[in-house]
Structure formats: structure tokens, C-alpha cells
Amino acid sequence: MRQDARPVPDRRSEGDPDGQGGHLDGFRELERRRQRAHEGGGRARKERQHDRGKLTARERVKLLVDPDSWIETDALREPRDPEIGDTKAAPGDGVVTGSAEVDGKPVAVYAQDFTVQGGSLGRSHASKIAKTLDQAIRQRCPVIGFNDSGGARIQEGVASLAGYGDIFQRNVEASGLVPQITVVAGPCAGGAVYSPALTDFVILVRGSGRMFLTGPDVVETVTGEDVTSEELGGASVHGSESGVAHFVADDEQEAIAQARRLLDYLPRSTQHELPTRDGPEAEPTTEPVLDGIIPDQREKPYDIDEVTRRIVDGGRTLEVMQDFAPNIRTSFARLGGTPVGVVANDPAHLAGVLDLDASTKAARFVRTCDAFGLPVVSLVDVPGFLPGTDQEHNGVIRHGAKLVHAYAEAEVPTLTCVLRKAYGGAYIAMNSQHLGCDVNLAWPTAEIAVMGPDGAVRVLHREQLAEADDPEALRAQLRQEFEDAFADPYQAAREGYVDEVVEPRHTRNRMITWLDRLSDAGHESPSKPHGNTPL
Ligand code: HXC
Image 1: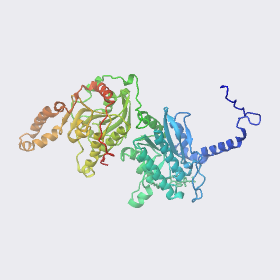
Image 2: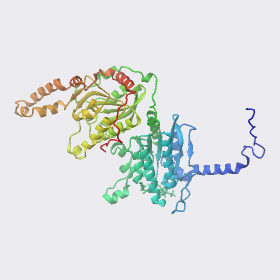
Image 3: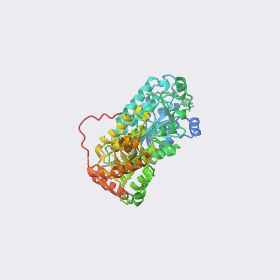
Image 4: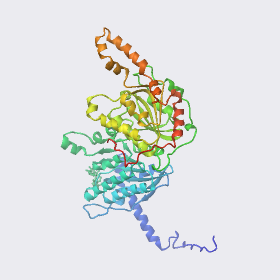
């Protein structure tokens, strides 16, 4: 003890065993209020939540965050205007908010509490979420939200709607600065869906998570369709048809595990370093299996996941939008310890063609990687854009342009490897050197051409084939001539459009080396507010 320091009086005495002096009543009052807040909507409503296979807001938070890291904020908030309408006392106003850590990294969290007025969003509820987003923006840390709500609190009228606006505005402010993840584990209806939709990743829980702008009753009134809420906005719809959900989880435990895995690949904010890893898994290795993976027949599919797994560290990937537009695959992985995004055409689905949904899916993924500083690796085997009136009339030009724009604007290091087909506009769109990819590799099996042999023969030799005695024999001969002349990577290599033709076994090594060499490379962007992405 320093000489001049005064001894702290020991307040503990017989009448004051805790040493809390005359504040004992105040501390008891705090404890009473805290307990009341923690009771949420009470035992019966919690049981109802459990009976439906759902966790309570606090149970969700506990599963998500590191033990002993949780600090709850605004636990004592209540509806701001209890006299408005029939608003009952609502501990925490139906949402649990706070700060915590996930794997030692800070995060901000909010979880709507369905046991309190159905998790409906009133003014205090909205301002708690807005404050949590403000804190995430200030602290430069990810924010994870759990949505489970009856929507705008009816009794609070337009004030609830204003609350949504405040949240949307902050979602946009946080966009491109800190990762935003939403777990939808209950109803999420009406305009409320736009907060999840504005975040980077939506994880939807099968069975309980539902998202729609207008519910089944309104749909029936307006369109006459008889549809259940699951059919309208359940996990299988948003996971495979609409593309609204990035991940679908079978239960809440899985959803929370997915959120934690996702955070493992993302930086704390776009102003922080990527979470890189050292270790034997990150070391370069040759992968001889890849040499034999491309089948002899051009049209035969193969396992693109196997290719990805053989290139990335430890064969580990986290696939995003697994069941939506599976003709293109988008995954997070590590390469030489650095988190990367992998975009790969999948020849086992629609021959890996680019269509409306594949273009939008890949464009969004590339933008996400670019925002968070993750290098993008593209594995190309693409026969072209999908032809047809459906595609043209629904705007494949507009959607394809998104992909071109996303790749061309990306500032992160990008590596492309052409495995087999790279035909026509799709060759350009899949991050060719012409869009600014840093390094373009090709396997000896690559075929970089204006179109495939069948199409080329049809266009170039229509009259000759029409007049031939044996058109099929002539077609086969012309086809072979075209393949010999064009279906390889060497014309592109001669032009310098391919930097190196590599044996498949060396792809991993080369990519790790290039990533290392490109790590300090920066793209010079002209000074302008932002590009005009074709939305
Ligand atoms: C106030 C609400 C509420 C709401 C539910 N509750 N929704 N209170 N405002 N929007 C209350 C119920 O009165 C009930 O209170 C408790 O929450 C649980 O609700 P239940 O109906 O018993 O639960 P359940 O049977 O599971 O049905 C859940 C539900 C249903 C499907 C969500 O409650 C429902 O349809 N709610 C209304 C949904 C809706 O139309 N919201 C407005 C959407 S428009 P007690 O005290 O009995 O437990 C919107 C606009 C946003 O949100 C615009 C943003 C720009």
C-alpha cells in the first residue's frame, strides 16, 4: 500500500454482512427489477414457446455467445407510452439486447422475445435494436439478430412503423462496415422482413422461421390462392426458390452453430484484418487426384465439391445458398490460412450454366467478399448463359450484368482457374482477366472458345450440312476439326489471357503462392461516390 493511501473502511458488520452500507434496499430493488425482466412474458408463455420447439430469447443468446461474456443492456426498458391503447407492462419491451464475445471477438446481439407481447415491435423495442446497431457501428463489431415477432405493435400505431424505419436506416449504415447476421426463428411478416433482407446473411430455421410480406389470409383475399404460411414463406421456399435465406437450419441449435461458423470467416469489421490461421492445414500440398477428375466426355458431370475441397485448407467449406441456383456454388473456405470466397460452376446441375438466379447469387456473394476483404477464387466450367424466352423475358441481361459488374468492381485479390468449358460471354463474366482478375490459371482440359463445338458447327456449316449425303458423319468430322483447333487453353495462353496452364495437382500450391504475393496489392479505383450496380 502506498504511504499516503487511505485504508478503505470495512463496511461489513453484523447488520450489514454484504458490505453494502445503507444501499441495501436499493440493491434489492435492482435485483427485483432484474428478475422481473428475466421472467419475460412469464412461465406459461415460455412453456408455450418450448412446446413449439422454440427457444426463448435469452436461451438463444446463451447458446450463441462465449460463456460469461454476455452483458445485457436496456434490460429495464418498458413500453415508452404505456397509456397508449392496451399496452401492458412489457419487461424489456419484448427484445433482449447486449454485448458479448463469440470465439473471443466482440459482437452486438439482439433477440426478440416472443413471450412478451408476441415480440411485437413498439417504440422502445425498436430503439433498443437501433441502439444495438449504433453500438456495433461505433465498436466496429458484427451484429447478430434473432427475429421472432408478430410485427409492428398494433397498439402503438405509426410509432411502431417509425421504429422499423429507424432500424432499416441503421442496417444500411452498418452495411459494408460490420457483418450483420439475422437468424429468423419465428414469424417475420410485413415490412419487418426488410431488416433481415438488408443484412448480409439470413439464417432461417425450418419449421418455425417464416418470412412473408403479406400473410396467407391476405393472399387468399387478394389472389384467391389457398396457401399455408410454410408454403408461402417457410425455409424450403426461401432456401431454394426465392434466395431470401442464405442458410437453412433444421433447428435453432444448428442455426446458431451456423452463425458462429460464419463469424469465423469474417473480419470484425471491414476496417479490421481477416481472421487468418497458421498451421499444417494451411501448408501447400499437391493433389494428384485432381489430375483425373475431368471426365473424358465433354458433357459428363463430375464432383465440383471434390475439386473445391482438394484446393482449400483441410477440405473445409461453408456453403452459402446451398439449395438456391445450385448450378453455381458459393462457399467460404481458407486458402493458406486466409479466408476466401469460392465461386464454382457446378456441371452436375444444368451443366453449370449461368441463368438468372445463378448470376444474382454469385454477384451478391462476390460483393459480400469484396466488402469484407475476402479474396475471391473462381473455378470455371461454364457452357454459357441459359438460352430461352423465359430467361430473356425475365431479364437475364440485367441479372448477368450484376455478375459482370461485381467481378469488375472487386478490389480484393481475385484468382480464376478454368477447369473445362469457358464459352462466350460466360467466359468473360466468370471473372476472366478482361474483368480484372489478378491471376487466370487454366487446366490443360480447359476449352476457352466463343461457343461449344456443336453450336459452332451448326452456325458455321449450316448449308454444307443441309446438302450433305450423310449429315451426321459430316457433323462429327467438323466437330472434331473444331475441337482440335479451338477446344483448349492454348489460344488464350498465346494471347496472354491465361497467365499459366497448370496441372490440376498444382492448383492449390499456385493459388496459395499467388494469394501471398497479392496480399499487399491494391486496386486503384477512380474517386467517385460509388458505381451504379445494375440492381
Ligand atoms: C401487438 C401482438 C402482435 C402485434 C402478436 N401479439 N402480434 N401484440 N401487436 N402485432 C400478441 C398477441 O396479442 C398475444 O398476446 C401474443 O402476442 C402472442 O400472439 P398469439 O397470436 O397468441 O401467437 P400465435 O398464435 O403464435 O400467432 C402469432 C402470429 C399472430 C401469427 C404472429 O400473433 C399474428 O398474426 N399477429 C399479427 C401479425 C401482424 O399482422 N402484424 C402486423 C404486420 S404488419 P397475449 O397477451 O394474448 O399473449 C407490420 C408492418 C411493419 O409489421 C412495417 C415495417 C415498415
